[in-house]
Every structure is written in C-alpha cells, then in structure tokens.
Length: 606
Image (tube, rainbow, N blue to C red; front, top):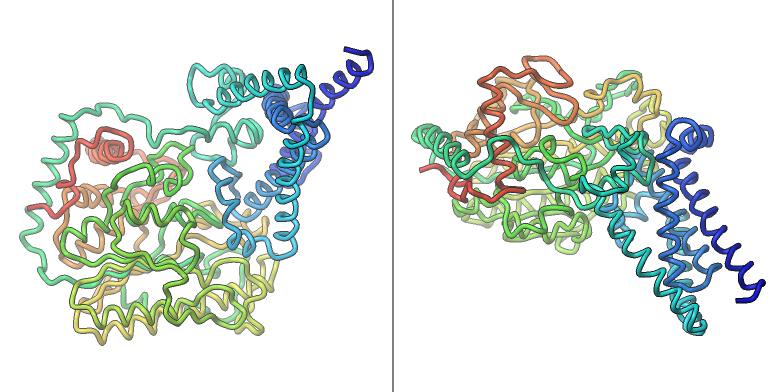
C-alpha cells in the first residue's frame, strides 16, 4: 500500500471519528431545544462518558454505512442527511409533545400525508428532497463501489460484518449482560416513568437504545397458573351475582375519541373570550361526565385508544413500551377488548378513522381486537370538510353513523376516532369567533378554539338525532390529550396533572346519568363504568376493574388520583394492594404471560 493511499486511509478513518462526534453533538443540540450551551455542557461537563459512548455507537453506524456504500464522500453525505432528519424529527416531537423520538417512530417515515400535515408544505418538501437525495446516493454509491479493488472489497465486507454484528449487539441494549448497557450503567440514571428525563440524563443515543427490543411488562410477583385461576374464579363469581339484576335490552354503544378536545379555559394564564365548549357543557350537564386523565400531552392518540378499548393500563407497561399499537398488539393473534366482549353478545362492531389506514397499524390492530369493519377516509360517503380544514369533519362521520344505526336491526358498537380537530392550527378558518390569549400564538389558539367549538356543536346535534332512534344509544365521548399549542411559560404555570386532563362524558338516550358530573377517570375504566351504569351484564375482568376504580379512579405513570387528591404514588391499603395486584397479574398474563386467563374471563359472567 503506497504512502498516499495510507495517508488517505488515515484521513478517512480520522474523518469517520470526527463526523460521529459532531453528529452526536448535533443530536444533543436538538434534544436540548436547540441550546448549544446545554449540548456542550452535556458533552464535556454533565455526562461526558455517556456522550462518548454515544459517539462510539455512531462511529460503528458510520462504518456500517461506509462499508455498504463503499465511497467515503457518499457515505458521509448519506450519514449527515440521515442524522440531520433524525435530529430534526426529535426536535419537532419534543416541541409538539414534550416527548423524544423512539425507534418505533421511524416507521412513520412512510406516513407522507401525516408528516405533511404536521410540519407544513415547505419543510415537508425539503425533507422529501433530502430523503430522495439520500436514496439516490445509496444506489449510486453502491453501483460505483463495485469497481473497487479486491483487497478493498475484502476490507469492505469484513467491516460490514463486524460493524453489522456490533450494531445488532447494541440493539440488544436491554439485556442485563449487554456490555454497552453496563458501560452506560456506570453513570446513567434510568427514570422509568419519564422517557424525556431518560434522554436528558443519558443522551439521545442512550435513550434511543433504551427503547429497542422491549417486553410489554415485567413479571409481577406470584405469577402462576394457580394464582390466575383463583383470580378468575373470584371475580367471575362476583360478576355473575351482579349480572342477575342487569337490563336485558341491548343499546347501541358509540365510542368517540375526539382529537385534542379539551377546555383551554381550565389552564392558568390562558384567557378565552366566549365559550367554545358551550354546546358540550350543556350536554355534559345531562350526562355522567368529568375529566379524563390522559397519559400524554400533545400526542399519543393511539395509547389512549389502546387503554379505552382494552381496559389495560399503560402505567403497568414497561416505560419502553411506548406505543402498544405498533410494538405489541400486531404480534398477538387476539386481545381481549370491549370489541370482543360485545361481539360475543351479537353486536356488529365497526371502527371509523377518517384518515389513512396505515396510521399506528390500525388495520392490523383492529383485526386483532375483533372489529368486523374498519372505515377510513375512503369509506366516508360524504367526506365534507369545514372551510380550509384539511380533515374530514366530525359532522360528516356522524351523519353516516346515524344512517347506519337507523337502518340496522342489530345492536351496534361503533368506535370513532376523529380528525377534524387535529393539528396544525392557524390556517383552517378565515374567521374565528373566539379570542384566546396567553398561549404564545393567538392565531393558532383562536383556530383551535374554533375547531373545538365546531366539534362541540356537531356532537350536540348528533346526540339529538340519536334520541329519535328506536333503539337506546349510549355515547362515550372524550378528548385524547391537550393540543401542543401552549407556550413554555403557560406549561410552567400549570401542574403536570392539569396538562393531562381532558373532557369526557357518557350519555344515554334512555337513562338520566346527570346526578354526578365531577368524576375523574382513566380511559381504561370506560368500559366497566358504562356497562354498570347502563345495568348491562359484565365479565369477571370488568368486575375486577370496577373494584380497582372504586379506590383508584385515575392513575398513570407519576400521578394518581387517590382518596380525592392527586399523588405521585398512591399509598394503597393492604386490601387495595391485593385487588390492584390481581389486575396487574391479569394484564401481565394477557400481554406478556401464558394467557392462563382464558377468553371466558373476558365474556359475560354466567
């Protein structure tokens, strides 16, 4: 090997180390809200060892890319584009949802429509151009690399195998014997209840690796077939006794998960002229209603939906199980849910989401949950929109639901996830009836207020139409999370609990449920609550949930509503701990364990 080639090889290897260093610094800059000072302090003062462990991982990744593409300049450009897009995505997600980027989020790269709606046309076009440039470089460089000498091809293949093996090993980060994890553990503090804090404490790379190859739950103490059978027998007997006094008439049941629906006037430092939720509040006064504890701010729609349909709590999942819809449910052949529970009672079950079917793998998820039909944006018969709003209106879907209920002789369960009130806000309506101040962006906030006003009005009109049907109908309506429109100062002025409370109501066309309107609930209690209030038969599982709800009506990671107050960690009595542990064992059994609790436990107790 000539001196010139050796020199170029040395420079190439030196560059391969400098680039990962700069890239990791860039990722920290994005993670720390574009604070260069914070990124520098993280690297050279606060968490130096973890920063350079991240550099090591990026160096191996760069070698892997270099070995595939064969050309240093093309590999460098491809690497820069990839890291640039990842850092930008992390910054965007942190800004909008106060939540970092997870490995599973990379699957969203194929969701072109959603990405366009979130970031806007100019940035979307720039990102698409960068992606296609990167793909073009990939193909061109691999073609050119075929001309390399045999010795270089040998080095290239060897580097590919070694770096690929190391990356595979790094992806097994959550194995206790993993040496990279052990190196991080020397100084890392893992915060199980806050992924945001994890990323801040260990760096973007450490936090990202922390979310690879995760299990749904850790095994609770005392898990065995015998323990599960005892739980099943106990609560099935109690449910059977309660079912002797139930109403036999089957009502239609309509679930409505309203995107970002919440009351901005509840927030400190936010002033609203007029009341965009006046129609909603009038309806809520005639309903069983209150605030729902959402485990997310600014996003996480699928997680709230998971809780509402399955009655399994995100709190009990490992902190790395960030999105069960994409990471867990599609791997299962079936999963007990309100859907499967009602299907066993001859309900027709339909899911409606007037958007792309691939979002959060809903096509696969809804199949596992047992839905008979899934209607997306292409299936809405009259997909009307309001002014400049790019999303199908709530009213358009409500009209189709009314038509379905009016012509069906079979009891219906319809689950509708709305899109009308989805971000971005600011360009949907030419004029708005409401003025919102204190959010940092009045135009966006005014647009959002108009959005929820339209949603509130259409819900009220929908319920009025339901009252005309022959079959009684129950509506369960809730907002999934607050919108990501509030400034840092506004968020700082409000407690974490306040930023996670949205509105919900349960309304029956045949019964008066207005006696108690100040209830706070987690969404995984919706099913047992509505079944008991409607005097409908329940399962042993729902009986167990009802008993947990009696002392812990709302709980997520880091916050619990217990004995009328919000606490970081509820100190349960011995009897309450036993009941809650029963629930934990059943959830583990279904999501991670041997499924000793058979389907009978999730059906109407005989």
